[in-house]
Image (cartoon, rainbow, N blue to C red; front, side):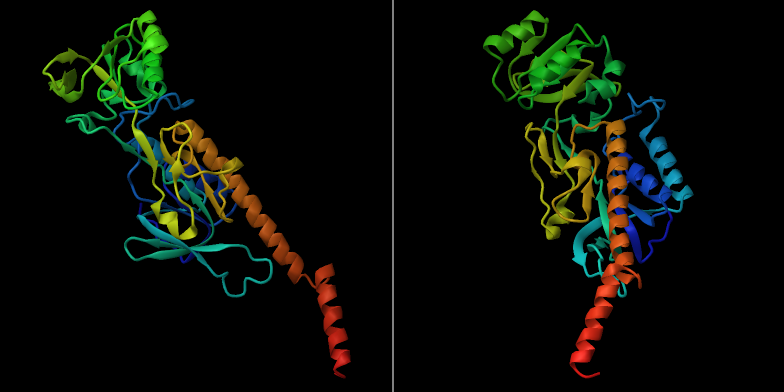
Length: 347
């Protein structure tokens, strides 16, 4: 990414993943000046391929993003490498006139800054994983989280599910659809009881109690799960539900903060329909506001937010045009008021 950052844009998109690039593409095609600021740390980078994405199933994440950047640039958008450090409100540009809407200054960690009339925040999230040796290194390979994203690739294998929260039982049932050999590791949590235990047993899902100490590998492949008491349970794949935390600390100065997600899966930035936030002029899209959105859903959300941003800019521009038009009712009212005031002063 070699695009130079201009001084100001109609919209600045923070985050160059599926949601951000899709939103930027939509805005650029609407003839908006737009810049994507990309920190270069996509959530799905460890994965070999993107799956369940219509017409692009099996495409590598890197190739998908490169295609997206090229499309944004094709329509005049900029894609710039950089990490956003803070976002603040700014006064309207000189000469913006009556009816001007919100404005923002986006400060990058390297000292650069840029002005934006509107913001689309698509900065994604961070997966917080259990502190189990070997787990992070295999994340996105044979340690995975989503049966729809990666389940087909581990079908019929010996699959383990590491319990990290209340969704573990559901996760075990989802992976049971893909393999008859599924083991639930209760890890540091309680073993399932009552109806929950009955449901697992009925589906042939074995429960292994005891804290997991580490992962065992052979020839750079997962071979098993070692428990604290020394037992090793052979597994070829391990499903882990991460705690998903939105990357949104740079929004603090605007008063936008993450909140605990109602489903208990982590922290997100709440938004209304289309990704509109409680701060005028700021939209969010993708995993930053919808932690479980897959690539296709994130891209669709970016497009939807961009449509709203463009409409909001049109409303602002229309207000400014009406206020400035010499024959508009507002302009005539101002002229009439001025003439009346002048006559009162004898001018």
